[in-house]
Length: 368
Image (cartoon, rainbow, N blue to C red; front, side, top):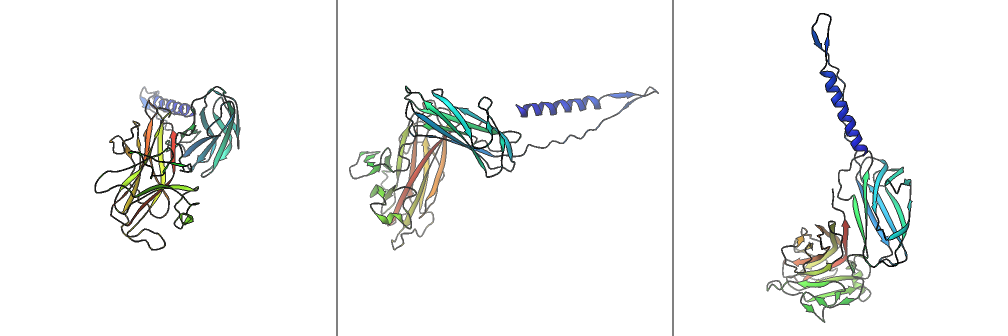
């Protein structure tokens, strides 16, 4: 609203200048002389304030009839310090008795204005919201936070909104739960797969089926602690191995997502790619011998080779975990997607070992 008023005032001033400059002055000799009044009008853009927002809820999953706590964090990566911002919260109506407690300043629930602080580059302010979930509610809680600067511009709006989904839409993201034996080709008793995930691999004759795929635990084998560490966080990770080329990974079908929002999927991974195995167990040779990628099928299909899957670029990661992705997709009316992760070896090496850990699915509103 303030930006619109400022634009209207500038336009009115410009029209006034045009009117003044168009007026002629009649002198005593009857000659009309044009007199122009030149007023300097300097247009300066608003200073940049690159805001981002996150929102999370506890407990996960919520308990009907019990308290729930949201934490909203707003950061500034821009050069302009802010003394006020606008925070729009869309909290489900079945959450009652809400209280709003900012770490600094004052938050107006009705207007969404948050002021009374100075937020400079690299700093963050948080708002805690506490309420109670209706005792009769059994569905999914979708809670949205959207932020905008006041008296500043934001050059990147893709991170100005976030959606908290409770319960979490992605199950067993860190692979810390027990295993099952579910694959794209049915139940395989000798394939310990992280629960909630479905393992897949190509049936291409040249690539072949991985010799091992399993949920590994450093408590069972301290060598996994490293170096190099085969877990990113926690006790467990998922690995595939074949003496030869292969392509494979896992997927998870997800339902109950808010339609029209954007899903962003990523995972941490690294490979041990080498034709030898002297200690330490490090990669060698071709730096492009093994690659990872992540994908989303916005139709909710479970075919790893479907043309509808949106894949990330290839990531070449060895011996130390790095993030693969993210890849993004708009969630359709059905609120259903399938997320995939994949690894592929280029050469028939003795070690084409792939390790994955800590998948993440983030939901945010579509950028305006």
